[in-house]
Image (cartoon, rainbow, N blue to C red; front, side, top):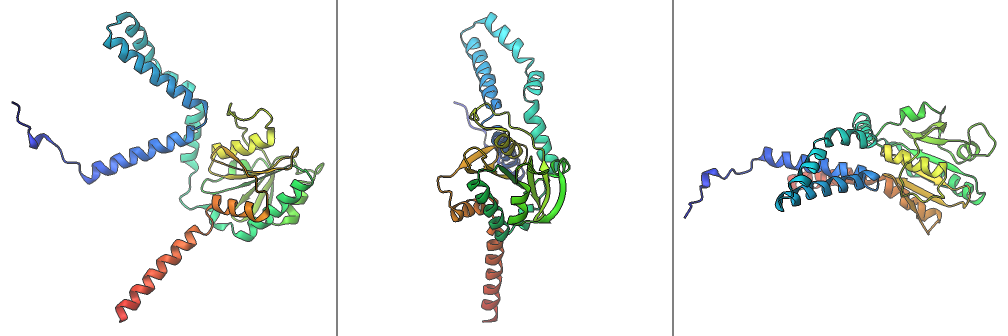
Length: 278
């Protein structure tokens, strides 16, 4: 009978726990980035390859195992080639990420102006694409358009998207509480799962949210429907009412969340001071 050596059991330290949490967070973020893309199918294929190698070893299928193991030995190079788009996207996000959320400069009255303009464009079936910058800077996309640095207003947005005008093609980018630029060129989504009837405007709105953490407001020229895009996912709402869309957008941008947290923090401090004075 073997005696369990208690000294051999290593008790996890705080450093070990932090290490595991960081690794789990990185894996979670990577899975979010490739969710809904062809990379998920490739990962499933690679996992199946390893499983086949394991089964071949169990049942002593030596020839098959040799072939599969030879294939697996080339996987590091294959992964770099096959996942170059996803790797580029991850590195771009890491390089441009800001710890200060830029959507703190977006206020509710600005959202109202954007949605009023989107509603009018919807009624008149004029296409529109508005991109709202968040944590990641959109400088490289702003540079592709015409600099405006104007106040976010209903009239300005409607005039920009007026057909046959110089700026109506492309997207408006909202940055630091202003309309930074118009007629901006955005990356098109290559997601094979998107409906075939999606045009350039929808693919551009989804594409910019795949590359960055921005949020896009898309107005369809064909149907007049207003959609929101975030994290490479497009959201259609049956409730196309102004208040309904405003609440959705405020929720997506998490506006007011930080203010509420600060308010709670100061309330706790005041309560503590009152208790101390008593």
